Amino acid sequence: LVIAEQFGTLASLYPGRIDLGLGRAPGTDPLTSQALRRTLGGSVDDFPRDVVELQHYFREAEPGQKVTAVPGSGTNVPIWILGSSLYGARLAGMLGLPYAFASHFAPAQMVDAIATYRDCFKPSEQLPEPYVMLGFNVCAAETQEEATFLRSSSLQAFINLRLGTPGQLPPPVEGFERQLNPQEQAMLAQIGSCSAVGSPETVAREIANFIEQMGANELMLVSSIYDHKKRLRSLEIAAEAGRKINRDSC
Image (cartoon, rainbow, N blue to C red):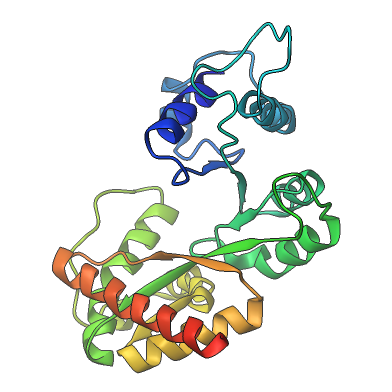
């Protein structure tokens, strides 16, 4: 109910601009998750029921309904299922909801998850056919050399996260990938399949190829670049690539 009212408030303030993404994972480490707990009785196994309950709160209140979301009732906030495994794919398909997969950092089950989602999909009031969003890393710059250098920040952050030492995004390091040991190289091998790094031409080509191969309806771009102006430039390059893809598909 609290989530329904929070997002109902946002939807009332910004009509048509608010979506709600729901996933089982706590989104943080176990200690922080424990500190954020609101009840000791909850379980990830309750997740499907929680999703259905939220859908109920966002619909128009029924006559005599005892508990309503105020604001929230009647806002019909679109719900997405977020995931990095087959569980979320099945649930999104069975409920007829759009599915967002965290391929930007956990692409191992991406292909199977997309196939599972589409196979399980049942049309719903919200969605008549499957709709997939995939996370995708972008590090774009004027040259390949600059993009490779800038990308080293996100690679360092990813390795730190996997080693259990997360922190702020570190500054880029020249020749970082040449310094990696075999274990670190293995950590980074998979995320390269969901990344575009390079000049505007290279990034545009790799984004287009990824969309075609995966059949994604939408991409959520991640551009973890230390310098804010260069991060904005990276996203500008990616946005232009997206506009070109849209023009070519018309």
